[in-house]
Every structure is written in C-alpha cells, then in structure tokens.
Length: 323
Image 1 (cartoon, rainbow, N blue to C red):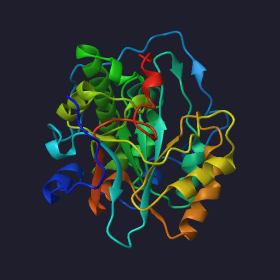
Image 2 (tube, rainbow, N blue to C red):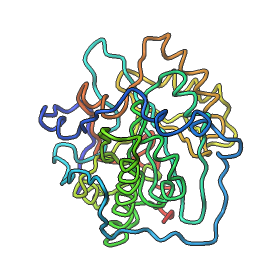
Image 3 (cartoon, helix red, strand yellow):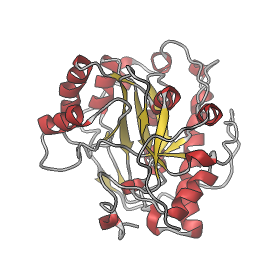
C-alpha cells in the first residue's frame, strides 16, 4: 500500500502523547549510589570493537523479572510511522541528541565512555538506542545508562539486522529478543539495593537499524508497543574520513527547534566526542537546550513520516542486502 509522506506536523491528541510517556521517579543521582566515579568513567580502549566466533543466541522466551514492566500493548494508531522531529511551540528551542549502540551477532562493539563522560559533565540530556546483543555484552554499561536520570534508553533491534528485508518469525525475533534483553537489564538493575524506591521505565522507543523499514516492519513494531524514532539531522559521524569540526558544523548548521540528531556511541563515531565538545557550547550559545525523546514528544507534536530514510526517501536502498 502506497502512502504519501507527511509534509507538516500532524495534530496528535494529548491522550496519545500521554500514552507514549513513561512515569519516572528517581533520586538525584542513582548512578553514584550504585557505581564509583571510576566505574562510571571512560576506559582506554573500551570503544574498540572486536570480532567473536561464538554465536550469542537471543533469548525470546518469557522470563520473570523481579520488577516487571507494565505491558506496552500496541502503539496508538496515530503514532504508526516514524518520528523524524517534533514541532515545538514558539520559543521552545529544545533538540534531542541520540546515540546508537549497534552491535552485530559476530562482534562485540565498543562503548565510547568519552561521550557519556562529556554529556554528564555538561549536564546534557540524551537518548541512547541500544541493541539487544550490545546490552548482552555490555550489561554494566547498559545498566549505568538506564539508571541515570539524565539519559533515556530505547532499543535498536537484537543484532542490527535490516528489518526491511526480514519477514515472519525472523522479523519478530529481531524485535522481541531486544525487548526481552532490555527487560532483563532493567530487572537486574532494579533488584540492586542501591536502586530501592527508584522507578525505571521500560524501553518504549525503537530505532531501525540502517534507518531502514517497510510496511511489515512498521506493523510489527507497532504491534510490539514500540514507537519508531528516526532523525532529521545526520552528521555522518561513522564516516572514516570525517573530522570533528565537520561533524560539529553539521549539527550546529542542521538543527532547528525540535530536531533529532543521530550519532554513535559504540566506537563507530571515532570523533564524535571531540565534535560534541565543539558543538554543545555553540548550540547553547544559539539558544538551544537538550531533551530526551520523551521530553521532546511531551513538548510538541511529532512530525511523522510514512517512510524510512537518512536524509531523503530512497537513500537507504543500498542497505537492502544487509540481513
């Protein structure tokens, strides 16, 4: 079924927006209660990926978490499609920095702690989209991000497979396995004494691997109760030849109020931390503030697109062989 892309912000009922937003109650600094400053900080070499030979089997069978999340249920029909940015009221100049934590089934990707250290030092709110495979191999880092009220976590599929070329059980498995892994991380975190009395939301947002989707993937995601979050600013930080100044310029020149920026914190963005050190002060000087995806959605009306793409429709077709 062919649909035309959205050209303007769509009116979304307040009840739909409220259904998307988790209720969060947290102490002033949960990470400090659970980890030392040394444990939270960047480790040399941790950003590097390495190949593995053993297959990590996703677990999609149900398990009993100590503190189960509320059932998500199907996403409201008005939010089907992908959110590329949010239309904000006049004068609201918030934007969302988002970071993908991708990992395939044959690697252990990195964790660029320099990025997270900088965000914490600068008090910058951000959203991370973590793959299920990445959460399995980085359970402490995933828990640290999930515990921090400065941040929000979404999921990124199990092993960064292209959902646009998957069907049936393979498609559902890529989504469901990541959902189960996220629930496991959340359950293990909430079982720690240092998290007593803290409410941590389930992961309700999803980023398509490769920025690719089709009608089947969108239906499966909506049926799983997840809302797809894409972007309207892609600085291209994984490109090997791009420098920090170019990445920063793409951010500062490309954003507008309500923008969603896609970056990478799994070591693929080799100069992302340096770029952020340039861009964050400049963005603040231009009057921008930083929000999580939930906060951005609560503040305005999501601009929903019926197709997935990086910068323009059709530019992700080169990934169709990626399974």
